[in-house]
Image 1 (spheres, protein in one colour):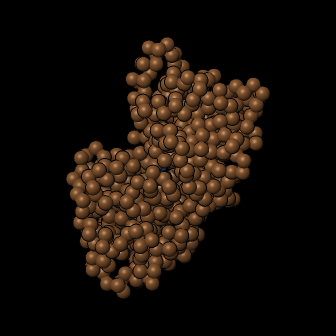
Image 2 (image 1 turned 135 degrees about the horizontal axis):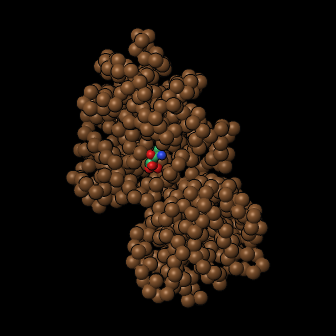
Length: 609
Ligand code: M6R
């Protein structure tokens, strides 16, 4: 979490830094700040403010702004210390000023040491320890030596942008377990936590590897290992532009991203089909490898974990290979029983989620095969997995994940089809038929998007409730979990997902007229069972929203609102039925007047435990 930026070039850097931060606000928005080498005095000047970027902008105007061509900036998701002006970044003193994304785990010990050396701390942050430690080691001559000393001492995760007063118009940067890219423009260079922050100026960038140090000045960028050896790095080019990372006429990123889903599926699925069959050879995943795995573990957090749950249902159903789904934060501490014949799949939009990354490292340590299903190119999980299957959703900016979920499940369908064919649990013809069905899904979703007004109307009937239940069976239960998370994270209505058959074992006691129930019933073999469960809640006064197939006949009195969806194979219905759930969540948030794309207390990329 947190976003950092830096600029050195010919432009006024305040504008460049603020523009970059505006693209990174999704990573945290508790406070923001910038530090700039003042063009006249060459002193480092800092302005920072609690709140959104707008508050920083206001403060910059009131205080006369900052003028210079080199600076660093930060947008914060608070971990250590409440959101406040004093805890905002940049931190440091007149000699050394830094911005930081990550967590310094041994900061208490370091702070005690620094206090014993006479340093006085102002903030409650872990970051201030790094700023003061840099100052402690800095001898006025060689910033590189000083950074090497500091990264030897700090434990935890960090992406750091550093200014040394004695080296004006130079930015130092280093990272470990937190993302950082270095942008390469015409006579200008950048640092940023994510590519969209530099796209207005350049599409070319370098990926900084663990503990590599970058030095950016007017002559360009140099890279060093943590031992001080200078190295060359490959320039990468972003495969999307500023426009595709902007709102494009939609009121919110989330709505835009919901509407981008048909295209995201095409981009993810089409390149992986050859002669009508799923084909992963480009990623180095061979039939022999797939055939060799005895068990599959799928590890992820949040929405990605819900996609993993759909993956489990379809892989087990089609390929008859046992699949375990785990929350990454649980998996890493439960001493899981893994072997070299197991495949561990890590699912992550950002590719930087701390718990998922830790689970990946744990799996690698025991020698299991690892596969990342990742959206962000070059992210840590992508780089460290044995095999990476990139989803091609394009940049997902809204904190609430939509199109990334869609392409994650699309990837699981393709994997399940392939695995089932290799394991001979389905024929080649059946495999081809399933592939042809998934190829039609984008068109069908376009039709579902026409139900947007209906979803908005349904949302208007739900927003006065403080609690809600989502129910479903089988794949519909997996989907309900995602529908429920989407609603609660952006509308702030408390909701839980329940396996419809489980309600009567306790939770049904909560059902009253004040507790609406959203029921998902798209699995024909389970339809009658779910309908019975719907009757049970309806007879206890619940208002019911039913999401089902067009072809199902539903009694008028069975539900208060029915959303009927176009029909595809039941197994692929999650790709269709998630859309109204996303739209209901979206409109509930809009109607409640919430900040849809930046819900309170959240950040897009969770790089802390
Ligand atoms: O980047 P990741 O896919 O690893 O992120 C995992 C979760 O933090 C993420 O899906 C989160 O649950 C979303 N806010 C849900 O909309």
